[in-house]
Length: 499
Image (cartoon, rainbow, N blue to C red; front, side, top):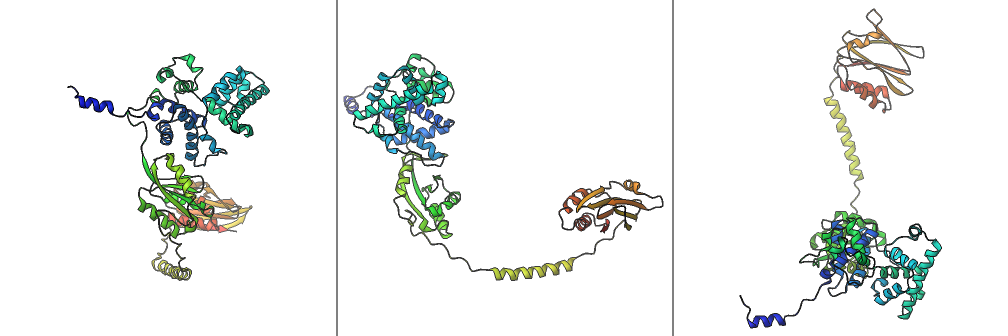
């Protein structure tokens, strides 16, 4: 098959596709995202890496340069982590993240570095090692390390002043953030990333932070070689969502989590007073907010909200993409008592009239009815199968119980001492009572304490031990034991003595 001249002309005149940083910088952005997650104390998992990288790519325009994309990715991941932890990013100088870095600054630092300053630049600012760790690792006095850090700060302050930036007025911590960004600056060019991951080009690793990090991440199995290969299609995420941002008044913040729990659509709390809700089903969200206002949790004057649409995606780590930042900023400009997309928020419903009097009457009638019912259905207790003939005599700091009972009866005895029930014997057979036999057909036992119960049954009461435990909690332990025994075995007989 041959192409016609017209087709060839059309192809040659077609505009070239603009390279997209999502594809060109895929390996570099993957390394920077994984490294920032790791230094933030986060275990890098495939799903988390994908969500954080998509969050970054949704913020980056297609034409941004490689080094700038990496630099912005670090700040975007830090903010992604804060949101996933339901916090607002703690950034005293948020405007600094948008300040571009000059490659000339990095070259000036490399030119001015002594071996010690270079070690502090790479390991303290680049790898995030603390000076205490470097003191042991390099076997260098702490004073020398702090002097090297001070020299780096002075170099950067002079570079900023040369370019008209007020770095000389910045505190050390703010200058340190600029130095950390410069320590990760990797202009390239770099060998193929998979060759780097396999351990080749070792000399290059000493001069390129990006490739050094890629090699270390792969070798330590924090990311895989496959994570560094961009997909053939769809490198740039293109999800779109519609979101409602709800802002809760300081007096109503306690109701935020309640509203989140009752939501039937995806939602995600931010800080302690914001809630982002998926607004793809407006009716479900409207019902939720109307009911919340009707019950006063929160009241309508303690709520405000705004809706937006744009690039984003709901994930287990919250809403990713730039839409979350826009919604959080815009909702704070709305008026209290107004939620866009939910017109006419209702006032709380009035309290219902008190029904205490009605319930009191119901309770009285119910009590009378229960009493009449019990009286009507009460059945006389069945006669004991093996009744006890018992005499109790006080003596020897306790009580003597002399009783007569059928020889086939199973007999148990429980005493009460210091207010506590204590089984003397739990009968398991008719022969167990032989130790109390007197030889004339009667039985006699002694118990120290202020009470005694003798139980006669046709068969062993298997639950007697648990009945004793339960009766210990009663105000009248012996009385409670009698009731429980008779409920467990209607044909049992119980003889009780109390002082």
